[in-house]
Image 1 (cartoon, rainbow, N blue to C red):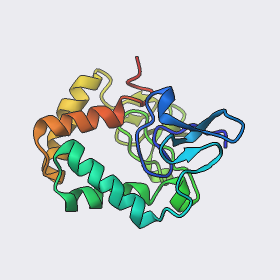
Image 2: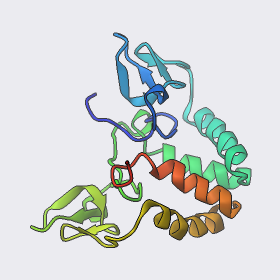
Image 3: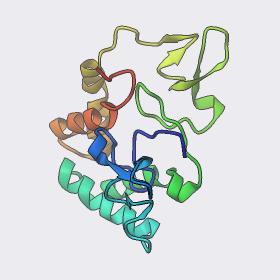
Length: 174
């Protein structure tokens, strides 16, 4: 698979550093799976189920971000059901906010009206960012309170979560 992903296409873990990626059979870096899910060209747990991966991810999210387990479970299920291992396709994500681009209506537009393959309709219209002066830190401060409210997490944990899940996106890479 030649596409590169920002998140593991099995468990949803952000792929931020080289050591986060799993390996293919020939030893090369996997472009879509993390080191915990995929080594030497195969899944580390060949019998892993969607439910098992979701529950494990929910436990991690709950612990890392002080999130109620039911909120964590819903969050993880909603995110991993769209991943390649479970859906059979890689949905690109907005390289500004991380939103999955499932359909043409999710995509932003270029100057000529064509659909953007990199950005969503909320972040990018007519070839320009809808908030051109937005910085990564400002974006985190803007969206963390929404996430904190939705997922019932402390504000500092919501900020950490937004930072972790968006720092690998091309708009914010330094």
